[in-house]
Length: 230
Image 1 (cartoon, helix red, strand yellow):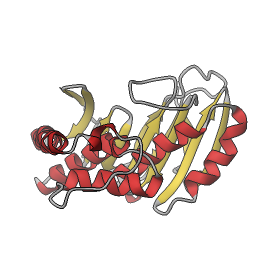
Image 2: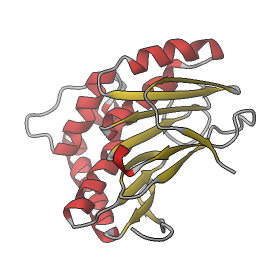
Image 3: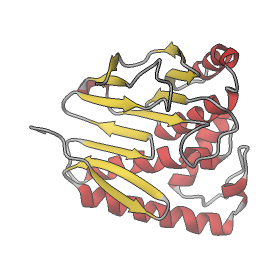
């Protein structure tokens, strides 16, 4: 992909996605399709939507629900904690099947991407001015990769904690999303940051984690290089 990347916004129900992909229609159609599949499953299994703990799947559960449930089981949260990441990865996979060389899907701060050129992914730790605007600098060889974030102070997703930002990097987007929720839930004070980092990075499949709380940033595991955004 030559030249400056162009991102388009796609809104479907309560989800607002920022998408960079030549196969834009393939991405959006997959989002709509997977959302309908998941909603049909939830109609039959409402506990799947409301539980804050892992749940047992029906034998005929669709792939999206299986990815969410697997992540929830690994981390110890409810399956809906993994929905945005799972949707982002499924959408990128659909774009690649449609022939796209590069696809970036940001589903409300939960990102999955496959690139052919370097990319900067911004991180937004709310009002932590001491931290400033940080970003991950990724090479194409780092992808496919997921970068998912949770916050107890921003966004509409449920968080039981009060951290400014919890960002998890993993190859599996459902897992990264669920683990970011877990990390956010664990942090209510600055003293919680280090124990939370240790707990999250110990999860199999997690590459690294970044947590920001009241101007303090903690990092663990293998993260892409951090750069300052202007």
